Image (tube, rainbow, N blue to C red; front, side, top):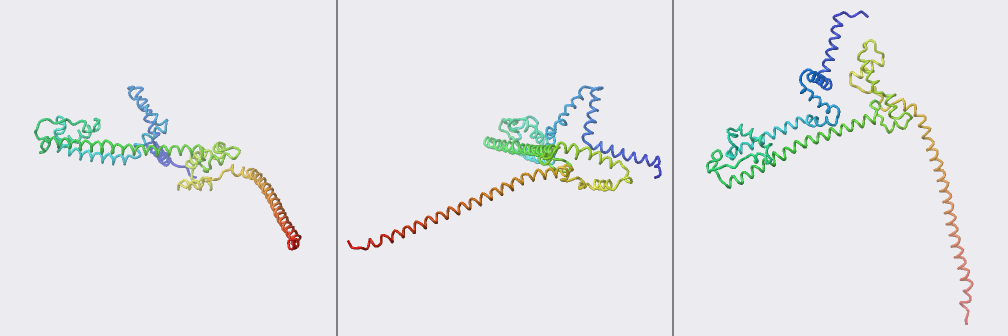
Amino acid sequence: PPKKGICTLFIIYMTKFSRVLYASMTDLNILYYTWYMLFSLFGTFGHNFFFAFHLLDVLVRYPLLKNVILAVWVPRIQLLLTMLLYVILVWIFTLFGFYFFLGHFKGDDCDSAYDCLMTTFDEGFKNDGGVGGYFKEPGGDANQGWGVPRSDGFYKYGRFTYDTLYNLILMIIMIEVVGGIIIDTFAMLRGKLQDRIHDMMNICFACGLDREHLDRYQEGFVGHIKRDHYLWNYIFYISYLRHKEKTEYTGTESYIYHMLSTYNLSWFPNKRALVLEEGHKKLGEDETEPLAQFQILRHAVDGLGKKLDEMNTKIVDGFHNTHENQRKEGKRRSAKFAPLQGSPH
């Protein structure tokens, strides 16, 4: 084949470099360790403050702890919508407070509806009783709201209703909804992690055979995944195909490369392995011995059954003969004493 020019080689290598750069920029692990190295340099040559970033490494070292962050990130749409609903409810309570309980706000915290919203939203979390724990008791007999006159009964029962609904709807129900979403997501992620660990430890990734089945053979499950279906051999082979010239593929390599390009995994040895073929004969011999023993036992049981039937027949025949002899003996005795019973005294 003709040699490639400098421009062609430059385009090929730049294309490969662009793919590698794109893959690096979109891979979270590469980005994490890049920033890890940068903060190490900043901490070494700048300020020790940047070393605090390395404490987050526990999230990478422990996958279960990483699920804590994912439990908030995965349901982010649900949490954002729930937060939007919370803000709407706070705005409704703010309007009621702005109109009916304006004198209960401290100082100039409620000069406008926007100030009331920010105060209600902020103080609702800071106080034990929600926004009711922030309110003060108004003084004097002047109007305490926008045209709403002061009335002890109104403010007493109104504040009771307002504070109770605020605590019940916002501080209890809405907060519990958010906590429930996060907890359910964490439980789901933990279950998936446990299932993934179980599959990695007990199921061959290539053929899908489990540990219980493969341990019946000589090398067992560990020997199978280390010799027959070694994970890195498959990775090396796929990398080899991707870097090899397509014009130099063999028939098998062309077929597998086509399967990889179409995301088709039918070329994997699903439920097939060399250890199955090698151990099939031996396993068959091992299985014939219990079968032969079963056949012998079945013949022995059949013979015992026949003997029992014969004994039962003899017992029934003997009982029948005995009964017949007793009946004949009774008739004979009756015939012998019949003339004596009919003679005169």
